[in-house]
Length: 109
Image 1: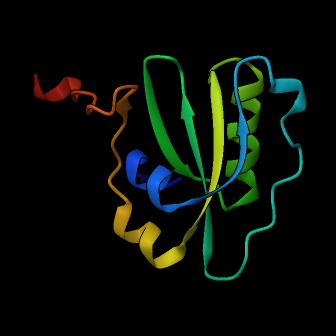
Image 2: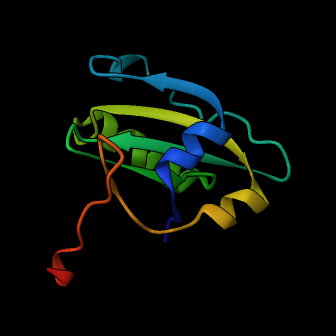
């Protein structure tokens, strides 16, 4: 199962490797960018309402996210490299709205 990280922290602290927006699906890289030892590849994706940061270091996870982006599930895809230890500290499992506010867990209403 993929790890989910804090979106804003990944965007602030990570080094952006690639950015694809609406209409860029045909240009999105089929090959996973290289990841240095001790680093994690994190995809920040959004569907127009909320966004999520997902560890896609493993090729199967990267391929799945890329396929969903190309299929239109995700409107934008940004890839970041982040230190492996820091990625572990930022793991939180939450989605956030496009304005950065947390998505309320439907089970806790």
